[in-house]
Image 1 (tube, rainbow, N blue to C red):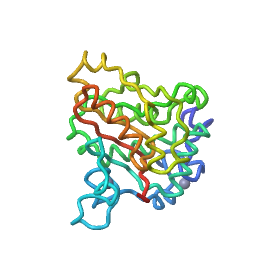
Image 2: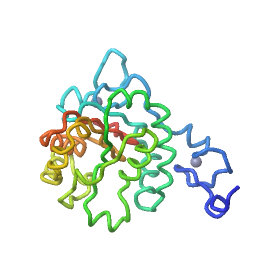
Image 3: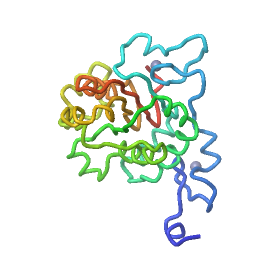
Length: 238
Ligand SMILES: [Zn+2]
Ligand SMILES: [Zn+2]
């Protein structure tokens, strides 16, 4: 056992209990409580659906998305909400490891089939990033980038408006809140068209998809051909 793991033992990303050495990245009890998305999944947003005959979830049958397709690891239950809150506000960045490991284990083949050559985290406004100390989407993207062997890019898509938290709004309010929130360095895309042809956006939570859609829209308007997304969890209520 190395000194780091004695001084800073790994804790379960859900219940926060200390994990026994070499016993994985989550406790068995919590792993069983998590609601992993399984087939059948919506062919657009990746949300869990009931029937194999239905290709899309209710939301995707009724709404046009700008992104092509996406994957979420978990349904956004209360324990996942708590876990992601700890990552964001209690600085538990290492809690991301378990989720990223599961995403890669379950979906590497599918993600590889998208043939994307760059991963872009949904950016935070620089004021929020300074306040929080990091962008949680970037922490996830960095680890996915390493595991999938796809480079990460953090300076092509920029958040120029310090928006209010999306959870304060309904679907229409969310869209308004995000108006003109992002900026794309079109010059960078023009310079390396092949690299930015197909990209994967990363976020921690997908709720209505308005953030991913807003990012996808501006990227597509600036020369990107296809946008995919990956998130840790996806809301169930839409
Ligand atoms: Zn636990
Ligand atoms: Zn859907």
